[in-house]
Image 1 (spheres, helix red, strand yellow):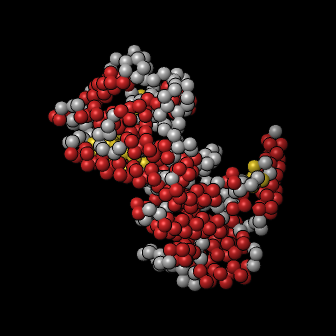
Image 2: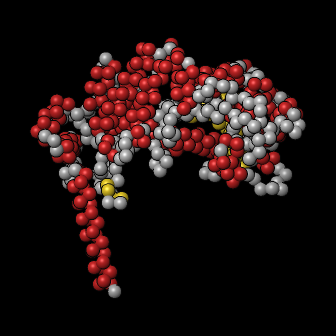
Length: 496
């Protein structure tokens, strides 16, 4: 991949003028709205600035198409970046209104069922890993896709403007090249490519051929039209770089230092959150983020020894069945004690940051009340963890009563009763879980006028409690597999 600057051939201003002319041509060529992906980072800022500058040069009577600026709030974004983006969206809205431009910012969030903490602490999903990357689609792709589909439904088609660049990685270059339009098209859509998954959505990769240095050259030479300082953005990246140097390079043979990437502070798809670590290292006033790094390390399976996170995961799958791989049970969701521990750590970090962090993060929600209520619902209604420990943990950590208006039918099955039952079951955790679930199922059905399905639910609970422990599950699953294979052999022999 060439390191040649996009501005080398025609110079900075001519190159930008030609690109703005291209943006105007595409904008004026049809009636379909635009969706600009905006993360607050350097690339998406350039993309939005170019669109904004193009719109400023179009007569007011021709600004008929809406431009939606959409940002994904995963709810676990780096807090510094999240604050930066929130401030930026506010300025975008104000500036667009003052300048009478059809630009409308939207902050998108995942459904409550799909947030990071509801999945991990509620259901027990293990931390994301390369072969189980459950987070990206739920936290980012799904909310954006829903928004785009709504726009398509109301307008017929949509053009999605992205700040993706080939220079970011070979994988991204492959994706961009794989969706380039066919040669020979002389219509304005020669600049666009069809979205791989969404019908009637067209991708406009406005700075696909730019290098990182090109990006910073533009940002430092071009004033931000919504008055969210590009110099401050440069400082944000500088602070997130390990050696705290400027992302700009003068010597073309020197690699750019502006490669810092901001993302979720919980991300376990990378070995370390180097940008957050650098922020803390470069600015002692950001040491309030240390608890976030500690929590991230708690969920990082690579830091848990040779067996990874097996010790904190159920040997049964989510449905209670056991599956073997190379003679070992495939681990399922996080066990109850770890989920409770993680919740406690998260609330402790939230409380500490609120009390010790700077003014701008004093109302931070590492986990929202809405998420806590959903987690409580899952623990009780789906996992039959009728100890109802969440309000107890919340009150112990936060020093206040857990604010939940929902009432659960747990009379006789509460925290104290389950503590007594656990004592009766001794160290047999599986037996305790089975009896607890049986009691809760009976309690749930006792208030129904028709109790159809009761015996099926009781039978499923007993099947889940069929094992003594992981070793017993391994033996029984192996026996069942051998028995099944033997039966298939007998059937085949009869068939022959």
